[in-house]
Length: 423
Image 1 (tube, rainbow, N blue to C red):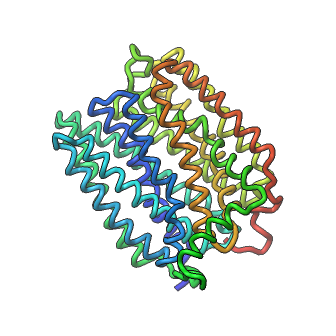
Image 2 (spheres, rainbow, N blue to C red):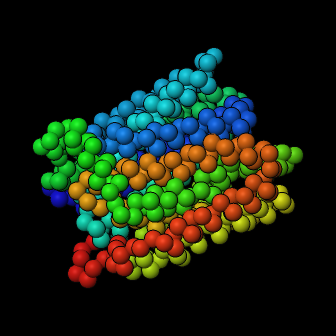
Image 3 (spheres, rainbow, N blue to C red):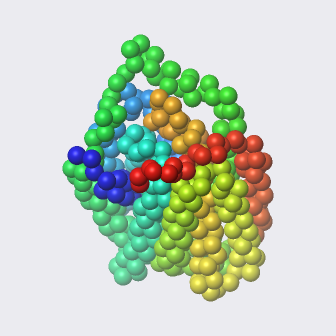
C-alpha cells in the first residue's frame, strides 16, 4: 500500500525529536532543578552529544544488516525502556551517575534511530518531495521540542510546585514519555510504508568491504573539506547559545540572568520560541521547494545569525518583562528555523549517491560534533565572561560560517520542485 507521507513523516520526526530534546534540553533543566552548577551541567550534557557524533561508525550496519523500518520500530521500544529507567534512577542516592548512564543509553538508541529514520526519508521520497517535506519534518520535530522543552518543562514546574517534590515531578514526566514511545512503536509497525528500496543488502564483497567502501565513497568527494567545514562551523555560535540559554533564563538577576521560573521558561522558550522556530522551518522548506536552495542560501545564513544580537541587550539590561523576553526568543528562533532549512538541504545534497543512509549519517555526525565541542566549554566560558560578553562572543562565532557559505557551489535547481512533479 502506497501511503501518503502525511501518514508517517509527522509521527516519525516527532519520535526523532523527543529523545534528542530530552537529552539535550530536559536533562539541562532537570539537573538545574536538582542543584548542579552551569559548568557541570554544560560539561556533562555536552558529552551526551557524543553518540550523535560517532554514529557514522555504525551507520553502515544499519544500512547493511536490517531494513530501516525494522530499526525504527525496535529502537523506539528501546527509547521507551530507557526513559522509564531514568524515572527509576532519580530517587536513588547515586542518581547523577545512574541517570547519566541511562541518558547515554538513550542517546545511543536515539542516534541510531536517527540514522534509520533519515535513511527511510531519503529512500521513500523523491528529491522534490524531500525538499517540500523539509518544513513538515521540521514542524513535527519542533512540535517535539514544544512538547519537551515547553509542555514537559512547564508540567514539571507545575507538578513540583503542587507537590513540593521535584524528583516526583520529573519521575511522572519521564514515565509519561516512556508510555508515549511504546505507542509510537506500535503506530509505526502498523503504518510505515514498505518501499522496495528499503532492504538489507550487503555488497558482494562482504560486510567489511561494504562497510569500508561506504566511508571511502563519502570522503572521495572533491569538495569534502568545504562540506565538512560548513557542517562543523555553521552552528558554531548556536552550539554555545543553546547550551546556556536555559540557565540564562533561570538564573537570578544577581547572577546575571533573568529570574524566570521553570514554568515561565517552558512557556517562553519551549512554547513561544519553538512555535516561532516551527514557522521559520516551514517557511524555509517551502521557499527552497519553490526556488531551490542556491537562491535562498544567503538570506538563510543571515536569518540564522543576526537575531543572536538582541541577547547581548537582554543580558546587559536584564528586563523583567517576560513578554519582551519572549519576543526576543521568538525572533531568534524563527530566524534559526528558517536558516536551518538550508543546513538540512546541504546535508541531503552532500549525501547523494548509492549509500544515502550512511552518508547522511556521516553528515549528521559532523553536525553533532560541531554542536558538542563548543558546547562543552560554553559553561566555563560564560562563567569567566559573564552573560553580556558571552553573548557577544556567540555573535562573533557566527562569522566563520559566513566565509564557508561563500564558497559553497550548490546546483541552481537543487531542491526545487520541477514543473509537473506531484507533492
